Image 1 (tube, rainbow, N blue to C red):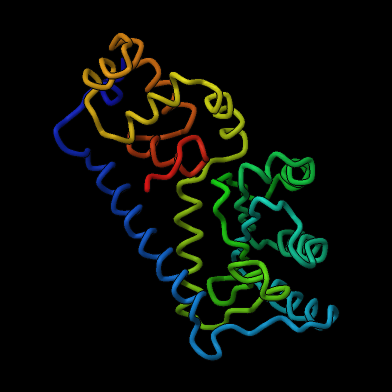
Image 2: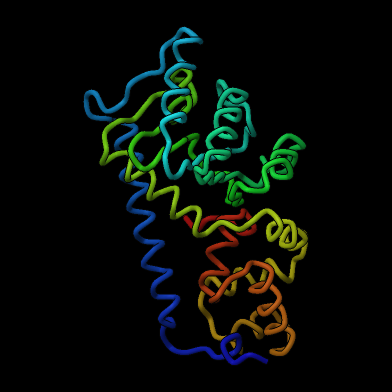
Length: 259
């Protein structure tokens, strides 16, 4: 068996240290975004016009002006955010002119026929599946963003963020979520583990950082069986380290987030 799957040291491997640092950075970014959204500085959020055609004109200008990358997140409500049909049409047009489209969706959204059809219909888009805790946001070229409905989904159809520092912070948050997410095909392969008690238990042990011997004894299974589960889980999650496997499991909703 690959030694990298079996060897356990007293400290984190270098890759795990990097992953842990990224996790800490992401948590800091999330806190920053939350503070800014709950108490934004004057002028940083511009509400979309209440009149539908005027709102659509703003969205057309944003997406139509994209040159490099558009990142969009689709939370648990699938494609039910305001002006979804127009947004999708504009994204398709942007993709056809060479703009990279990155779509983050929740596992719950991927369970809908609507989103599965979109994944099949847009093979050139980059799709990743994360947990259900996603922001309703669209970021264009790291320079302008659209947040649909506000953090509590009650602040009207959405707001445009033009403050560059805030947009880049939101973009970093989405990039961190993207890094931990997995392609739809990988998520489909991992889904059976939601129903597997041994796999859930092994995932939990991976997150604690216990040695294989201690974890196997804790779960009352042989060391060989435990390590086989570890290898299968890491392969299914496309994880390069045990810490990354545990982190991705949390992001995909396979494990609860620690308090």
